[in-house]
Image 1 (spheres, each protein chain N blue to C red):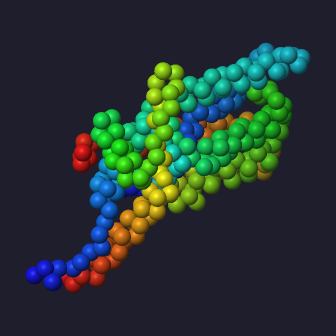
Image 2: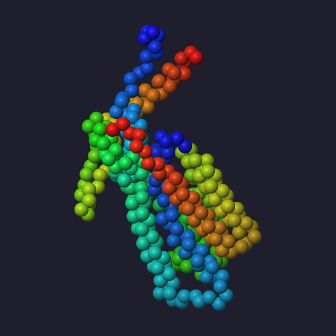
Image 3: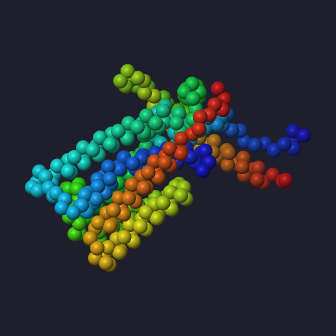
Length: 202
Length: 106
């Protein structure tokens, strides 16, 4: 990537590459899966017991989102773009809601029940993740990463539907995939910082 | 000798300088950016970036908006419509020079 392309790419994809902002959502799902696998685990009863994990996760997510926003502003600065910031946030939030749909309790962040099949959420998430692959401004590596992520989710969705598995495998693969993609995007963003230069004609 | 020399189109010297071109390239891809973003994207020092921004502002290519936020000055920079027009013109000129160079024998 030459310097001109790097600068244009950075300015256009600045918010899109901050996918780590949604990391607590995926970690919470993975933690829920692990907890659910423990024999004799305690299950919350009543509306309060069910809604508290959701509120807790919401608080953690807002705090993390605010902290990462401050971090990126301190490290990179502030940028105003037309649409990217809103659309990418929207995509990640929709992936979260698609996962919640699989957890059989749409408002519960801690998935207690895994009986639902990912027949609906799987294709939606796979389509969302394939979109950066068709963006010609992305590097080949990023396009391949998202294509592999999308293919993984499509495969696990198909297998879950054919073999009549519950949604656990699907949710685990999805969370690990989006977390890995978020980390890869963060590394890419860090690599787009310019080395210090003093070559300007003052 | 000078008659045989190919005459290339004139390029805008204000834009042609690498640091200023880098700033304008960033600004052409967004609505506006703050001083920190331009610094991290271009790799210029604070003093150097400040000088380049002043030059671009004097040429009418960018606008600089300074606001006071929590006892610190926040500098936001954006491309003016004249700046967008001049940058497009610059890229067209560069393309013409490239094409002209490719046509030269040898």
